[in-house]
Each structure stands twice: as structure tokens, then as C-alpha cells.
Amino acid sequence: MSDHWWWRAGVRPGRRLLVWHILPDGQAGVLDLVRQCQDKLAGLDGLDPVPAAWLHMTTQIVGFADEIPDAEVETMTAGVSEQLSDIAPIDVELGKLWLHSEAVMLGIRPPFALDPVRAAIRASVADAVRVHQLDDEPDWTPHISVAYSNTHGPAAPIIGALAARPELRPFRVGRVYLVAQERVGHLYRWERRAVARLGGTTARPSCG
Image (cartoon, rainbow, N blue to C red; front, top):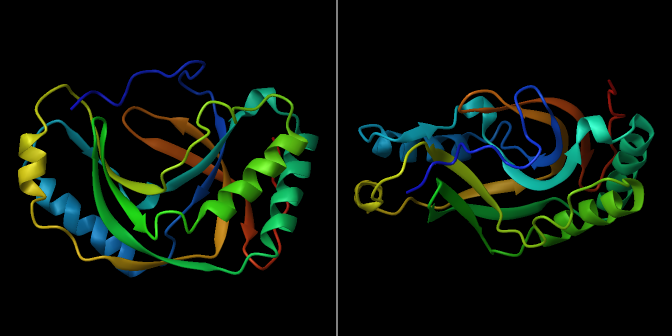
């Protein structure tokens, strides 16, 4: 395992990133699945479990909020809403266990089911935002992080604790959220700026 909490380029305390997230709001089965995994890891050192309020599936990092004008945010958000209006809510299963050197994660099945959502977001970002980070992570593996590693050490204890694979849970994706996110200690926190619904409409972003 390696320490997840190194400072990425341009990131600093108090500086916010605009990010599109899929959030597991109101999906009790998903929250219970994460809790079960975190309970199995509770006796191990070197891990920071993600609190339920801040569980997320990072879908697309847009860029730093201080580099993106409000007008571009509005245009981007309207574009995401328009593109997602033609895509019906998508049902997947969450629970495919993945161990990254920096995190314990739960992936989805089918693995590419949410690609149309990300493609719609990326197209709208490219059309509306001049200073963006689309080139930084062109590939995407949808997942929800259960815990982040905060140290360097062997992965064997984590692998052993999670030897019994979790039961997959249904996860419905019906909306995506634009958030202004910052790192606070060993935690990602955010303010919701807008929501775009699959097969629906979007709330206007709150700028500032």
C-alpha cells in the first residue's frame, strides 16, 4: 500500500476543484455494503474509511474552480443536462472488490454500463470550458472508494480481511452532481453546485 494523501499538481488547502460525481444518495443497500467492508477493515492501521456523507463515484474532474468563469459553468451544466435527458436511468450492481495501492474500492457490473454518462459529461466540458483537465484521466474505471491508505506498507492484511467477497448490491444511477470539492485533511468535502438528471432536467448552478 502507498499513501493516498500526497498533494496533486495545483491542489492546495482551500483550493476547490469542480468535479462531476455520482452519489449514492438514499440507496440503503449501497451504504450497507460499504459499511460491511469498513467493519471488516476496522482493526487495521493505515486506512481512512470514507464517511457515509462523503461517499462518491468520481465521474469527471473538470478543473480548478478559480480558473473557470461562472458563464462557462452554466453552459457546461446546461450541456450535461441536455445530453443526459436522452439517457434513461441506468441500473448496475456495485460490489466488485478492487484493491488499489492507495485505496480499497468497490466497482460495478457491467463494467462499461455508465460510460454513456461520462461521455456526455466530457463532451459538454470540452464544448464549454477552456481550462479543463480532460486529458489527465482519459480512461475511467467506475468505483466507490471504501477507504484510503494513509501509509506505506503490505497489502496482505487488507487482502486477508476482505477474503470473503461482498454480495453485489443494486445501484441505480439517475443523476450526476457538479460539486466544488476540496481536500480537508484526510477527507474530500464538497458543496453541491448543480444536479443533472438522466432523462430529466437540471438545477441551475449556484455560482460564487
